[in-house]
Length: 357
Image 1 (cartoon, rainbow, N blue to C red):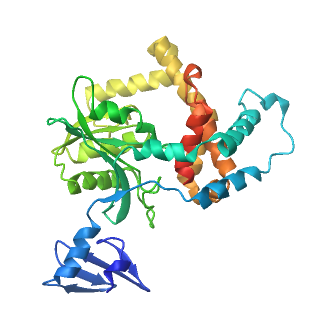
Image 2 (image 1 turned 120 degrees about the vertical axis):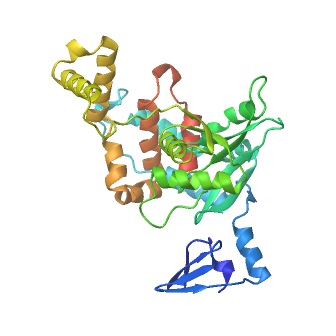
Image 3 (image 1 turned 135 degrees about the vertical axis):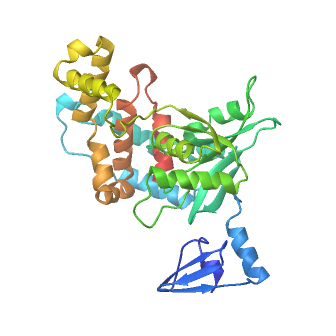
């Protein structure tokens, strides 16, 4: 078997056969047959070990890809008519005038090479982790007591969202320093996408934990936002002997299975009261939060259901049309950001670019 054609030690596709080789046990499986390999040649062993080592990586987008993007943006087909009521108020989705300005900036004003240089300041690597070729930033601190910190992004995001905070974490003016490990989630940025379905937050948590183990960090802290929050929460719960600290900027809490007890009976009655008579059981602040949640479910959650139920249908449009991808992301950047902190054109272009790549 030519191992140079292999992508990972766990799962490979060779001609028309599927095979698995477990380096730890020496079990080699092809279809229904399994074989025990007692000894590997040194050259093959070296190839396998090298495949799971960190390889330096540099972001270098081919000029042909940049020109192709600009060509697609230039040939964007705009809707023939806009309802004047939709202009400026985002009630039907993205404001058409805002999107037109965004696309013009992305085509003519956005500096790709500047964005690359901004990210290439950091130490990038790729490494095979649980069968996927994962991209990650591994920025070490000069501090002797630095704590390894796993930073996990969400959607629509990438490792770019950490470019301002990484120097603050690795070289703080005062306080605790950290070694920063920031992976691109599977299928994001420069990380390989899974070929099989079923890779959710739990499986991604296993991948990120294994990444830390392969880097030699037996103990580490975690931070996550959006999907990253779901991922690192899994890590903290599943690997408590390794995860020494958990920080979330999107805390997720779900009701656990109910047991018959006085406390849970009281909680159940209060929940019923919240539904039937919220003014009697909830504070004004809690009612405002509940109304915001209801508003989100009513007008802003359709994208989530599409992602969760029919992602392949949407993928054709977003992957082929940069204008469509920009509209999809820019509308969320606007909806999810306070008005006094709204994303500017450059930030939206950076965010969209990292997903378009």
